[in-house]
Amino acid sequence: MLNEKEPHRASAVPEDYYEQIKERLRRRIARRLRSARRVLDVGCGSCELDRFLAEQNRQEVVGVDISGTSFPEDDGAQGRVECRKADARRLGFIQDRSVDAVVSVHALHEMEKPVEVLREANRVLRAGGEMLVVDFPRDSLAQRLWNEGYYTTAEVAEMLRESGFVSVECSQVARGQLIWAEAHKAPAGKEML
Ligand SMILES: C[S@@+](CC[C@H](N)C(=O)[O-])C[C@H]1O[C@@H](n2cnc3c(N)ncnc32)[C@H](O)[C@@H]1O
Image 1 (cartoon, rainbow, N blue to C red):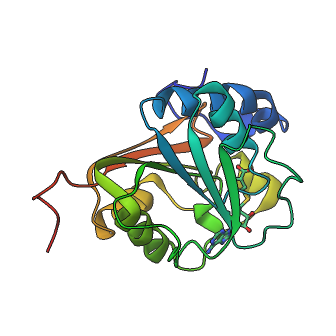
Image 2: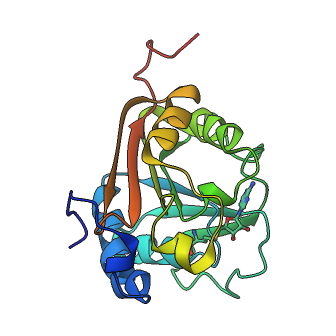
């Protein structure tokens, strides 16, 4: 179950666990972000999630990736998805307070300066807008499979606060194999100085 609160040991889940939950995960993300009109996905990879959001929620989605090598030939979503090759630390082509939600999936741990990426996400979000980070936690199945430098839930929560987000809620879901972190940009007039 994706929303299971109790963390499980990585050795207790099958090696294809992330593949098994992929579809449920993107449905859960789509449900969480359904009230947004314009969404930004940072570290979007092949823009798969973005196409799903555009189809499922009829949202306008901008996917940003520093590599861009996996972008699809066409957006497959009737012009509602825009894939941009860019460093998520510098999104000069997106205006301040112009998106309703920012999502980042399995990407924060790969970003060189994650706090700078989160600050930039904060800049482009409208007041009260939603930030959703999903990533692999340290010592999860991902550690066993790919052994990259993953964060703990506490570290992700701290980075979100450091980047100016409020109402930060960070937990481990999917039998403890994913970090699910929600936060908001402060409401208008309550931004950090
Ligand atoms: C593991 S992939 C995840 C892709 C996709 N979100 C998914 O769930 O399949 C991480 C992505 O983050 C991208 N990335 C790393 N640093 C970045 C940065 N500074 N700005 C934008 N994208 C970045 C990488 O190019 C890579 O495509």
